[in-house]
Picture 1 (cartoon, helix red, strand yellow):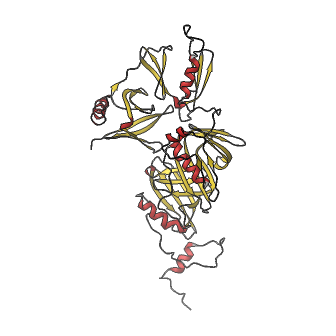
Picture 2: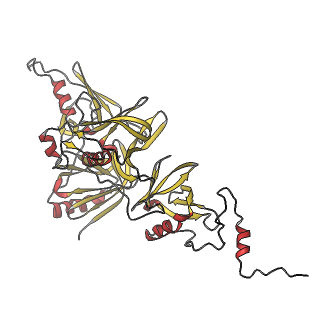
Picture 3: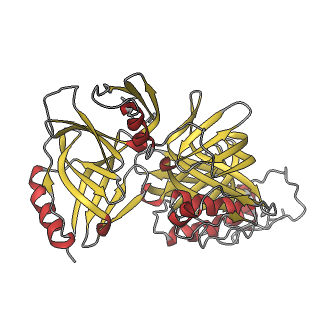
Length: 467
């Protein structure tokens, strides 16, 4: 099987250049985001055009899909163009050509809509292009249009607004308005934040543990709108990178977690995770404001009326809208019979979920630790006669997280799980039977002296001689 692999690349996401790896196979293009760990697979049969261009002052690759979405990657070497061109021609039957950019620096030219991107062209060569999904609003004016963009906090420099002068053609009729035509072309694919359109559905008074409060959630095709008593949020659909559906420790509630990148902001606080909580027994009928043509675009994955448990309907709706799989618990079962471990982090109680590819902690603050980021783990205070131990996770980047107050009954289950995943354990020792006799009538506040109990249980201890 013929494959090409490239490391030390970066992918453009809302203006930010994020490190990534790329692998070209006979039928697919695999791109792994090194910051989030998300793997994106592009089918070669869906690729319309591949161009060799510049991105971030380095050689880059622009992959245009048949649905109009442009993917841009940079960090290549000049010598790698030939191998990529030959691979695309041999396996995908696509001619990969070099895209010449105009370097004149003129600010007067022609705007063309190519797929879901806007190109500014001078002398039949592009100067720049803007993905329309990055546009948050388009305001028409007198012979001008103003584009507003989604803000990415991960970017050191962000494009906030752009104004384009669109002169009126004197030979055209009065009914032809070039500004309005431009606005309609932009709004067709833009992630518009205006709420003039009718939402697909509205979820009223949904309990959100992070950020805390109850919110009315309006679901639009391109974004989510959250309305609370104090704060409002607008979350573009494309910024959702992961989704989790997890049971509560008590078995009566469910958590639905959305990982958002870039995060939403509340003052100076950033929230990378949106945690919704639902009662397991609560049911709700949801009517979707979609036409038959719009439902057909989702390939039969949605019905016009959804009935049943709220968390199931919400998960099904988001699964289809975001077009992403939802992560659920794997094989791990804790002492309580649920796939969750009750613990604390920085004196705040929460829940730790050992999943198939990482640890998810809820809820102050929510975090997802991928196994590939973990250097080693440590079961601290596990050899003393206390009723709990600490679970320490050290990352390869030098950071570490400590989850304390984990019940001793979870030790062997968590130890076997970590060992099965091939993660290095600093104190690789499975817990055995305690070497002291448990006092069944000891109070929960009584302190145990581990040295005293060990001396009592020692086989070599002799009785005191009588004089």
